Each structure stands twice: as structure tokens, then as C-alpha cells.
Length: 456
Image 1 (cartoon, helix red, strand yellow):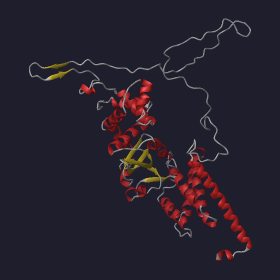
Image 2 (cartoon, helix red, strand yellow; image 1 turned 180 degrees about the vertical axis):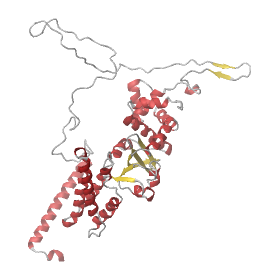
Image 3 (spheres, one colour; image 1 turned 90 degrees about the vertical axis):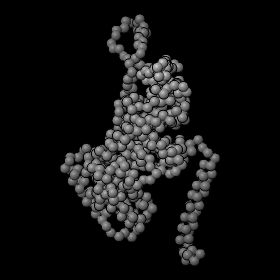
Image 4 (cartoon, helix red, strand yellow; image 1 turned 30 degrees about the horizontal axis):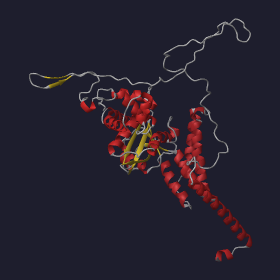
């Protein structure tokens, strides 16, 4: 009360107006929360319409949509369209100018799987009494009794492609296969087969992908939360031009990073500002810190400040955005001009992040943290090395399938399931990005290798 009594009449009126505005905003927020409790058709909607919503259709830069391409499969039937004897408009004679080709792609009605029956003779040696069982290509030695009727590797490849490649929950995979192919399968069969494959050919391919990351010129890394047996864990992603590798670990330290990116890695690592990447064991690596994360950190500080306290962060944002602008303009500049501008920008950024004491604590933390990265040459490395992106957005995109899977499942029930998930997801995403084939065909080729295991 003493403070209010010391204010003038004009100051009191200003205070009352601020309080009235705050009360009105709080009332509006209370009403919004009350409405949200009753549920809505779009529970994830932010409740605000965009003034300039994005138009549907192809995005700028993707080129005009001219026509749909012809199907890759050749036609199984050709139908000749019929022409009238004369022009429908005037009755005049018709002359052929050109012939068009149109196609309709359709699924067969009630598709049926291909079932191969084996007549297996069982004999007993009349001399030693040993039982001898007949063999045939594709027939497993233990395929008898309760496990005599199995599905082939092609069915399992399709099931794993639907689950790991498309993202369909494993509990729905049997229904999708039954609807499209008529094959009867159980969720348990898919899960158990995945564990066996992860210990066989898929696991071997996964280890090759892990080794290939350490030889790539650039690696983009990011991580997200996961759960193994109800316990918190980390799902880490490492993306290169040749492979996409995932691993699930209970902790995210430099030891886990060095499982994929060794301490003597000769390429460039693009990551966020996680402490794992700043460990002493990785000090010798060339790194690029994600500029999107840096700009987000700086923006949060700038928006919370007033007056001169905004100046440090605002200037830092301008310099970082100038680096992005220069990176986008690289193709329009000659090499000498680009290098000259890069050096000048690096000098300006180094000067702005020089060691000094700032009055504002938040600005001081920005200076200490981002300035340390600049001293290590990790802010503008993307301007020095051609082909390097200034952000780890590639790694964030590769984590999206796992994030979606996390929403519709309970993550992994045990370590074996987590390892299988990481192996299959790595293989399927690599096939999607690099192979000129479908995921199911790529998995089938992997299953048919000599080290393949039988399915039940």
C-alpha cells in the first residue's frame, strides 16, 4: 500500500488499466480452458486461424504438375477404344492423327496367396533304425508337426515393411495383410520373427550400417525420448548420405555417441548443443552446431528482455541469420566473393562473442555458451565445407517415424525388442533413402541371403 500511496493520480490510473487488461486476458484464458475440457473434434488444434493459410497442391519450387506417369508394370490387357464411323458433329469422314495410351491400375478381386504344398516322405533305416526325412528347396528341416504350416519370407518381408517402413502398429499388420492378400498371420508371429531376423541377417546388415557411419564425410545427429520396459531411455539417430542408423540406450553420454561416431572420426558432425557432444573425448572432432537451435535459444532470451538488454541477442540473431543467407546464396556468388564474405562474417561474429562481462545474466549465459562454440569453430563451419547443412534438421526428420511409433505403442518391452526395433528401422529407412526398390523387396533380398532363418 505504501508504494501505491506514493504514486500520482496518473500513475494509479495507468496501473489500474494494466490490471484490467490482465484480468480480461486471464478470464479469456479460463473460458478457453473450460471449453477444451469438454473435448473437441480437433484436440491438437491451437484454436487460432491463420490469416494466410497455405494453399493446397504442389509447393513452390517443386515444378508444375504436368501428368501422372505411366505405371511401371506393363499392361496385362490392352483394350482398343472404338471410334464412330463418322464425325458425331457433322457426319464427315475421320482421319487418324495420333494414338494415345491411357491406363487404369486396379487390384485383383479377392487376391489369393500362393501356397506351395510339400509331400515329405518319412522313412526309417532298416539297418540302424534312424529316421530319414525328405528334403526340398525352401522346406525347413524342423518344419513338421505343430509348425508344419508356415508363411514364406515374402510374407514376413511385407509384414515388417508395413510395421517398420510404413509405421502401421504391429497389432494391425495382420488385419492389413489379411485384407489385401488373404494371408492369415498373428501379431505374435510378426514380433517373434522380428526378434529372430534381428539376430540374423537384419542384425548383420545393421552392424554394417553402424560401421559405415564412421566413414561418412558428414553425420547429422539428434535424439528423442524412448522407453524400454517402462524405463526412460534415449533413441539416437545418425543420418548420412549412405545410411540412417538408430540406436536405443538407457543414457545419452559421449560413450553412446562414440559407439557410432568414434573419437578419431575424420568427417564433420552436425548436432545440437547437447553436453554429450562437447565432452573432452570428442574435442578433436570437427563439429557444426545446429543454427536452428541456436536461433531458438537466442530468440527466447531476446523476447524476454526490454531496452538495451535486447541488443546483445538481437545483434547475434542478425549475424547468425546473415550466415544462413550467405549459405543460400552460395550458388550465385563466385568462390572468391563467397570466401571473402565468409571471412568477414566470421570476424564480426568472433568480435561480438569476445570474452567480456555483461550486466544481464541471460545474455552472459548466451555469450559463454555460444562464444565457446565459436572459439572452437563450430558455428560457421557450414560455410567452410561445401555440402554441409547449417542445421541438423535431417536427423530430426529421420526421428519422425520413431516419434509416431512412440505415440501408438508402448515403445519397447525389453532390450531385445529395443535392439530389434533399432535394427529394423535402420535397415528399412536406409532402403527407403538409398535403394531403388521397395522396402519389402529389399527386406526379402536380405532374408534370402544364406544366413537367413526360418519363420513360423
